[in-house]
Length: 221
Ligand code: AMP
Image 1 (cartoon, rainbow, N blue to C red):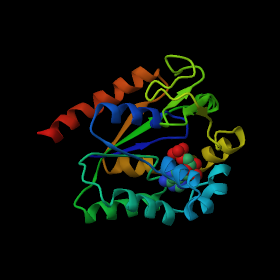
Image 2 (cartoon, rainbow, N blue to C red):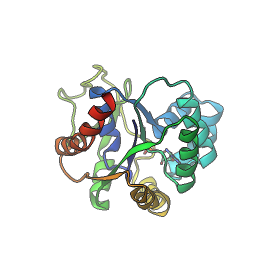
Image 3 (cartoon, helix red, strand yellow):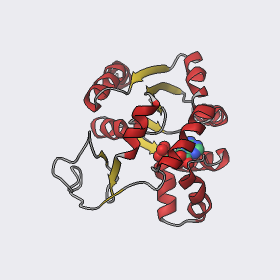
Image 4 (tube, protein in one colour):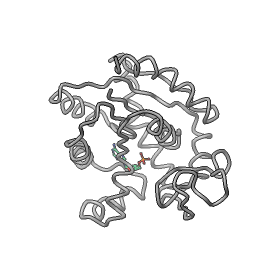
């Protein structure tokens, strides 16, 4: 199944993606994470996009599509979770053509809706394990043992360069200007399900699994 996670920055889609991929057989493609990896490696692409990303602007569609094609070209897995892609109408249309060439289409778009006030609080408190990338939050999602990652035991944590108040303002503007339009786009295609992302992490996971489980078991038959 081709699953897309759509929603504003800080809505918790990355965290839910981690849970889902630990539980179910999904290949997780986060374009944001793929770009951060390019920046860490200081590849030509990484160097070219690092300022754009730190400022909270979107990376151009062409670069994003190249990145997606590169990441899914060799994939043999059946289930892929796209997290943070597509983010513009042009990306969505090109994505459709790309999938079409492989005889596939988007199965479900999970739209995580959340108010701006909660988004700001969630983003400002978040941090991640440097070794495995697991995301935590100062208030509502701390590691079980302080300063030790639940997943890999790593003890070094970091905050994203674009998780500042200024960059967040820009990211929210871009979201409302470009990405929010995809809600109607996928609603018309009858693949959109809305998830109330304002609840506790566990309840959001439950809501998501309730939506996905019937579809996942259908796909396994
Ligand atoms: P994320 O990790 O999904 O919050 O993405 C972090 C940043 O990566 C965004 O603010 C953009 O600068 C860039 N980015 C990630 N995915 C896309 C995309 N599909 N289109 C444009 N820019 C993207």
